[in-house]
Image (cartoon, rainbow over all chains, first blue to last red; front, side, top):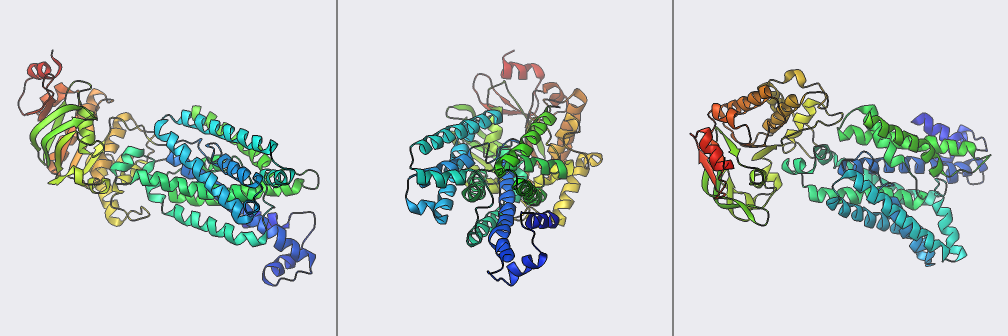
Length: 315
Length: 235
C-alpha cells in the first residue's frame, strides 16, 4: 500500500524530488512549481483514489451481503446512475448553486439515496436475485437514457460542466474539497464498523437473522443509507466509476476465504484503495500518449474478473 | 413453556385452531398434519414471524404479541428443514452465530460464548466437523450443525420445521434420538414438524396432530398409526 501510494505520487510528466513532497505538505511555499504540483494535484489525487476505491468496495460489500448476491454493487444496481441523473438534472438546470461543491455532492447523495431506496423497494417484491440484478440494470439504462435526453436539450455551458464530470476522473478534486470528502468518507467508514455484527448474521438469510434478534427492517434502511453516502460521495467528485464495487468484494472473499465482516471490511478498504491507486497509476502512465478516463481502466480490468467469478461459480 | 389460548393460526384466514394447550420443558412434541394444514405457519407464529389471526401464545409466561425479535431470540430458536451451507463459512463460526443475541455491538465472542459453542458441538458429537466448511459436509452433518447452532442460542424452546425431510433413514433416527435426549437432558421444550410418523411412534414421542376435518390441533401421547392416519390424512 505505501509502495503503491509512493508510486502514485511520483509518477507524472514532471519528475519531483522527495524534498518537494515533504515541503509541500509540511513546509509549503507556493512559488516552487514542484511543491505546487504536489499540493494542488498529486496529493488530492492520491487521497481521492484511496477514498473512492475504499468507498466503492465497501458499498459493494454492503449490497452483496444485503441482497445475498455476489453480483450486486452500487453500479450494477443503478445507485451510481441515480447519482448521475441527479447531478445532470441539477447542473443542466443552469442554477449555479448546483454546480458548486456542495451542490454537486448534495445532488449526488440525494440521487444515490433515492435510487437506493427504489432498488430496496424492488428487492422486497423481487425475491429472485437474478431478477433483481436485471431490474437494477434496467433502472440504470433507463436513467442513463434520461440523462442523455437532458444533455441534448441543455445549454452549451452547463453541458460542458456535466460532460467533464461524466468522464470520471480522480484529478478534478482540489485541495480545498479534500476536507469535506474525507469527512463524509470517515462518517461512512465509521458507521460501517457498527454493521459488522448484523452483516455476519445476515449471511444466514433475513428470516434467520430476525430470529437471532437482528432488526432486519431497520438494518436494510441503514445499509442503503451508508451505501448511498459512500457511492454518492465518489460519484459526486469522480463521476461514475464501474466495477470496483462489484469486483473488489468478491476478490476479498476469494483471498480471505471468510464470512467474518470485520476481515472483509478491512480487506475491502485496503484492496479497494490499492486497486484504484493502481488503475490511476496506469492512467497517469498513459497520459503522455492518450487521456484515458479512470472508468475505462477499471472496466477493462474489472469486467473480465467478474466474468471469471461467474464462471467459477458455475464450475 | 408454550401455552396456547384460543389461538387461531393463519395468514388472513385461520388455518388451524388451538383452544387451550400447554407444552412443557423436558419434552419433544412432533407436529403431524397434511400438507397445507398450517404446520409451518404454527412454527412461524411461535417464532414471532407470523401474527395470530386471534387469540394468544405465551412463551415462558410472556405473550408473544408483547415481545420484539430481540426478546424472542432469548426464548426460542428455529431450525429449518434444510441448511445448504454457506461459502467460506466454517462449522464453528456458523454455530457461533447462534450466540448473536448475546454478543456485544461488534459481535465479538466472549469466553462464555466460546464455552457455549464448544458445549453445543460436544453435545451433538460433531467435534470432528468444527474446522470444516459448511459447504463440504453432508446434508445430515449440516442438519446436526443447525441444531447445534440452535442449542448454542441457549433458548428454553427450540422449534424445527421438518428437520429430517432431506435425510436418509439412519440420519433421521439419529437426529430424532438426539433431539429427544436434548429435550430431556437440557430440559428444553422442543417442537418439530415431521412426516416420519413410523419413527416418531416407535420412539414414543408425544404427538400434536392437526385434525383433517375440524382443523383443531390435538395432543396425544398414546396413539396407533391407523387412527393417526385416519384423523390426519383421511386414509
